[in-house]
Image (cartoon, rainbow over all chains, first blue to last red):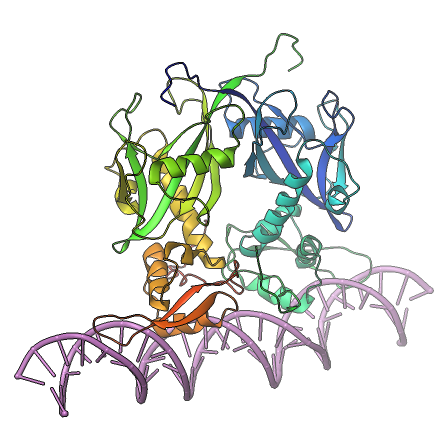
Length: 244
Length: 244
DNA sequence: CCACTTTATCGTCAATTTGACGAGAATCGT
DNA sequence: ACGATTCTCGTCAAATTGACGATAAAGTGG
């Protein structure tokens, strides 16, 4: 470092998106097919390099989200997940990618939005399956995204971000059940979420449905933290230590 | 983006460290005095650019930690905090900095370690005080680091990372009290932490102290998650919404 | 050696929260 | 009208938490 000839390494900075939704009884992630080398034709997370040296990371993430999904980032949940920068993750040059995590409601408008590349929802179980090939280290990123999501809905109200603007308690419970892959008792769940102040705001209206009593509709309230948290059912307790 | 003359922006990637410890009844952060422009003479987080295009982010963080503190990163807790990349955060050129959060036990060896720059522990309250001037956006980073630390010890066993290899239940409780700035009941705290499996492993030995009954000494067990979590005492509940 | 102080640890008990269910309410299809 | 379905409220025992009494084991100063 005290060598006068040492120069700051110049590195390409990219932004990748892990866009998750709950759809068709599974947690799904948006993947695109790569149109260029490397990994041409392989599925990958949407993303790209900063458009200029003046673009902020958050702005780049929002831009990519709009380009790939056609969604308006306003009101969507978008947070940094992690930054990945292994020296060999891209064979062309050194790339550091800042990955963002986004939660969008099921069935967002036309999925294959503005950009020409074919975007698709893929169940995370499929994406994480050992047989699935993904570009770069994207499989690891997806694993991190799913784990972050699972714990995030424990102590925040973000599960509601997977629902539309109006939703029922059952809609919300299904989000938890699908993300955690656990059955929850409808009655206890109802008591819990309706008891958290400022989480759910009743609209007064009800669903029209086929079969079954109509459910009350709610909107998201201003609460962002669940206090106390909604804990995942404890692991079967095989006895071993909970490492990790 | 479809302009053939467009080039990938080359950006300088840095790694900064938020090294926290519990010392003298306060949560303190390691700061160094900058030896070069910009912000010459101002206190800043330790950190620096990647040493080469082949250095991984984690390796750079560990290298900086060793250079600045003389600590062996093996066994220390080091995790990514966030990546900061506002276009104007460094007047020289575009810099994206990946910030890491480290927890070290109180009174680590000689603090001003290998590197010549004067490193010092500064209470986070002082660092965050409105009157304090820090380099770049480091005040915001410290705020994020403190908040992450506060919530991290709720649901992980990481509070023990602030203690030495052997510690008492009271040592651990003081960590919680100092980080949260809340008094905790010694009896309930004792019951809680000794009841979590694989959190504390009794060594069988006891402290020799001046005044008061000797306390049993423990080491960290293999558990990494607190299940159920140790919740901060609920805010006095002024009634308002918890807008995070 | 004996109060007296200090700190650690164990125990108790009521209040709260959770988990497991029963049962009624409200709708649809037949 | 009847059964199937789904939402919602209620009950009750078990587990957890919060508040606090009491004892144990040290040091200190007479």
